[in-house]
Length: 118
Image (cartoon, rainbow, N blue to C red):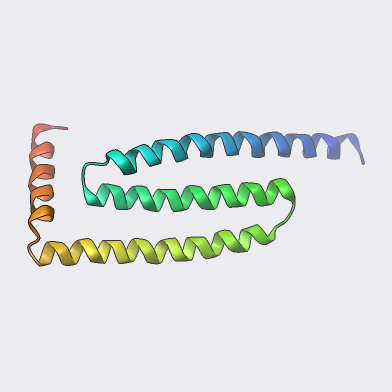
């Protein structure tokens, strides 16, 4: 192994650990947004972001362990996450079309916040 290959391996390990640290921080922030989140669409977007961060975790672990089958799992999780997001969006749309009072109230509050400049 040449000196360059040794450096490249060490550099890759450091980058993967940094990426895992950043993904951990983003995961915590997204969980806070999911819990706090004032409206249902905010929570749906946060759950979609959790799927994206999960894909990042799986990909980083795959690179760290040199077991690249994890990338296939990440791709599958991306497809399932996309379908879940579409299903949630359709659920919210149907609740809005049915005149659900909670959705209509959230829409009114959102319009008022937008007018107030929040």
